[in-house]
Length: 139
Image 1 (cartoon, one colour):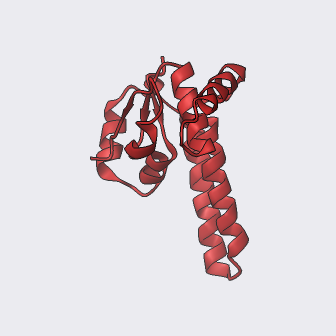
Image 2: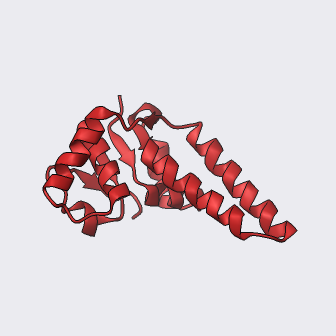
């Protein structure tokens, strides 16, 4: 049963080898930790943008290695869909005029719908979302 949803910033930390986060993840039962498909989108967009900017051989090889690392990570963790319940929650948050970026608001809506804790360093934005529970595993 999923209990926590990793925000994109924590996925980036994980890929960077952040030891405190990796230790925390290692101690959590694997079936309790997931990511939103919105996080998958954000990470893949970033990796593809990196590929689009690189023109020399070594940089291109590195960019493809990072893309592969990201794809492999997402094959090891449950990915929570953004379904109509998430869309309705997203629209409800927008109607409240919560001043958070659209992608972050979609991730927050997913966490609210699934009643899970969002694991993020972005306290400033996510504390504006009514009812959202969040924690930071980077420390």
